[in-house]
Image (cartoon, rainbow, N blue to C red; front, side, top):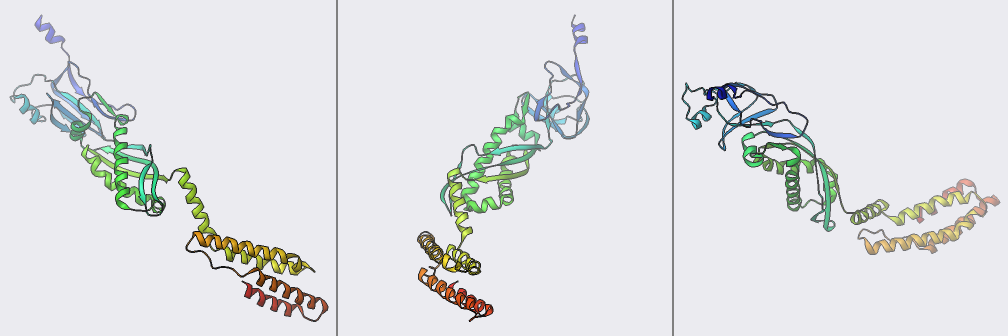
Length: 336
């Protein structure tokens, strides 16, 4: 009876793993009560590593290649088992396979805004998101620190831990750098490189190598974004007083082409100058770089009255058109 049981006993003589689908980082070879036959073939493919674990201790780590499991290939396991060189019976050990492929398009983001001290806006809450990629490089360390005795360990299982590490490192970096939000948003490539450098030692601790880290967007909460948009708009307007003067000056030659046209725009000109002056004064109270006050409406009225008289002289033939144009240019030059 004992002989029949021995004959029926199944031995594993080929050990290999074909990764099915994406996202698998570690897998324990399904041996159950089967024993590995002495002299069995171990196949470790490219983008894989294999680890032999005996009674909770890592015996050996194998990179890509084909191995015949003997006392020569497993010297450490041989010492653990106290094998003699002539001993060739089956043995029991756990075999774990690890994928060393690049894990791409891993997403990270700030589920809650990060509060930082900004040079321009004071205390602000900032959001950011992007992608990164990594790969497993040290199977021994990953097994000891992360996957342990689990039958399977996937990218999804690790995703939350890595995302929290990213956010923690990002918060520290922002607090240490003192870089204003505007500069962060304008230099996302440099920001990504800085974060990658800070995160590489963290990933290495778990037997991982960070391959790339990309910052796709940095933003403020909606209410702060509106304030930023308003500030950008004010900077684009610049010297509102000079802009108003320019509009007035360009409208006078057009009106002068028609009889009575200048008189018709006199009131509008004065009103326009008054509005421009009021807006400029308001800006001077809120911004240190406000424009200088504009000419008073009375000065504009004098220019209009003079141009009316000169235009009447042209109509009577007393002044030529060239003389009128020269005088008009001189008056407008003083106004602007």
